[in-house]
Image (tube, rainbow, N blue to C red):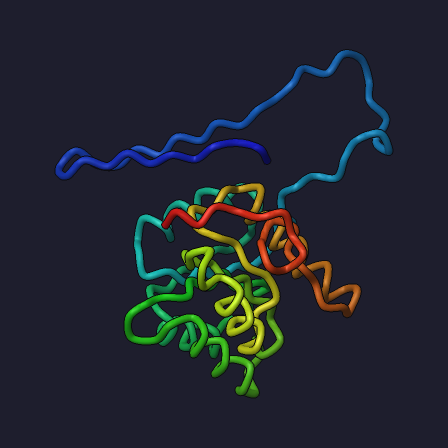
Length: 192
């Protein structure tokens, strides 16, 4: 959406999230066909967010809350597989490096299962460096992930990846995330 999400946290004082979104004032009526399609996902999506850092889970939830019907979080791949075995989801946002079970192993097990989410799209959330990014993307693709977003994640990149994987279900084609290097996209940041 072209905005910015920041987090300030002080021990004992709490945490403050700030979201800034650009807007312009429209003059007169605008015909629907003249408007661009929204960049945010559908309002009734069921999303599973898997990340070992609580602050990341909260930040992704805040980004998605206005656009999703149900958001569930898990702190590692094992917890995610347990949730995926009993709840149906439309998309999974999966961190790659987590204790207990990382994202690649969790997605391999999900794809190898006979569960209801076996074919649910998975967006990899990765902090891989530019040096190992291509190998990392190949490893994620071979595990069964469809799109990749580099951390720190920006809302518009996350929305683009979700729309890309959900669009690929309808089009029944392999997708390339428009914001991810090495996947046909224009690139993203890999500072974390």
